[in-house]
Image 1: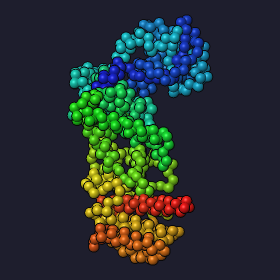
Image 2: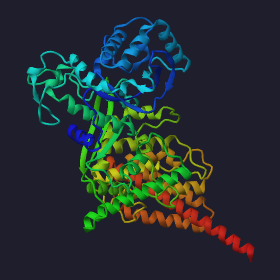
Image 3: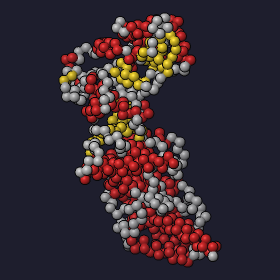
Image 4: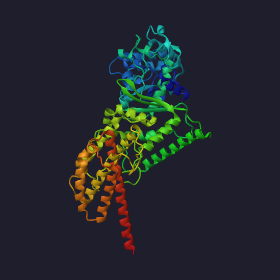
Length: 597
């Protein structure tokens, strides 16, 4: 992982010298050549290469130099951090005249008060970074700064390090390992510290081995880790969040300029912590169009390799990191890499396994974001305004294997099916029927069950729609319960409690104890129907399903059978809805033709 980030930094020319970090500066205090304060220049957007002492700035006696927070440069009371900042600036002033001008401005009480008042007038907060400009020249960009800092920063190296020389884990060259590494920024939204988090940290004895102390367990050179840090900081800037983690990815070579990166359109539409709405607007439709085009472009890249036609240069490998913050440390949830062709094939397989008819029976379900899918694995609550907070707290241990299954084409954990079934049972027991008097299991939860059965239990007979030839009788038992529910709806449209609300959970777990009672109730429902043709159609369908079930009705269902039951119920409900819509359409057409005659 470290080497891959190191190579990425060199390939993308992101290399920063050791002891530097890219930072944005909220405001610059502008001085003239004779030391007069003339105003404040607001920035906060452009990155600057700044001297950085890493985690040492987190203490009480040291700060970063040339660029620091307002509270350090203009403290309410004198502090060690403020003295450290001014001493460093004074030392630079021996080599750079512009720094000497800044020192004199800070030593002048009136000028110092004017600068502090101007910052307050521009609403610059005490936690914002500031620096200096002299005659329109940024202090951090003065030519003398680099040579001065290269010498000045060595005073922070702890004595005795030279004797501990070892091989760098990143480059393999002999080096004096860093005692502590500078923190990486960008994980604050996923549990990280606002000041940054350390990628390599040995703050507990359990992290040490073979009698080695702290950094000797993972020796890295300052120069090599500077490249790793800038690569990770750059990638984290645009990395989307995923259930309390950040999704970071890159390739071993850049994609051709004329082609989009296939991962952001595919995964980017899945990772956002915002659930899709039922109706998609123009922006969503455009997003789907971009995703489809990116998949086509990725297809052309892969086909060019298979056919031998040099369409474009194809990256050999991809790299994916799932990261979160934990007590000031970077927590690597998952690091995976593989070939581009395998990734493309596994993504296509994921979409194929997810295919499922919508509840209306009019077509396949629309794609939704991965966050929306993961929400279906949480315990169902009628009112949950902090659902994404729950997602981060309850599912971090499950999100990682789910993500691994998507990109590697492997099976899902059993807990996925357990959670999806719990949500379905809760919904069918407590939710009110829709405007058509129906209760249909949550489609996305059913998609989880379908993928779990296909991958973990090798169910080869599951299709996107109801399969009347499925060999497992439990699948057809679920379909039969769906017919019983539809039959009751036709016979008693205004019933207070439906058979689904009363018997779905028990029929899903112990069908032999419930199915006979439902069959007895269905005879009364058939007799209640005034439409003889409809009654005959229901009776015929129930007879066909009974033939698929056979003579033996299972007493107790295990987890795979419960999942098949739910899918059979859902897909039969979709088929019945499709037939109902077809009948209504035919009736409306006949009435229109009759009026025209």
